[in-house]
Length: 210
Image (cartoon, rainbow, N blue to C red):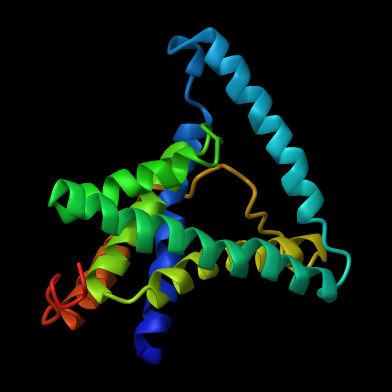
């Protein structure tokens, strides 16, 4: 594991979060009733249920509470979900389809679907694909695990700082950044991903055990 590349993965996740805010805002405003009124009612009810649970789990009154939250919401999901969806699911789907892109995107779809939060389906779908490509290019599960941890952990830390009135930035705000900011963030993300991929370009899929 290269420390410099771990830090790069962290930066990739941060810039991706900025670019993905546009998708988050769009997805939150999708009218699911056009697809199915009954599905829209179910999805809205499920969203409210999970929102209550999330608010309960992320109500931090001390730094100790934040540390517990980081373990429960950042460390454990990062390890568990990457083992299931990248190491197991993505590898299996790649073997079935003989196409690594199919394996990555189908696994990302399942990753997002299993959360049952359809007003956040597409940004989570894209996030899963990001983890998938990081795993495929590097051949190491540690990089997507850290990316997953960075995504969840950064959100929790920023939420704690907002609750403690250290910052006025509320990461739960679904309003996106300006389009030009999102485009700059997207360009930065793609540029860093290209560099990350080039660092592992000599590692073939077969050498990775795929």
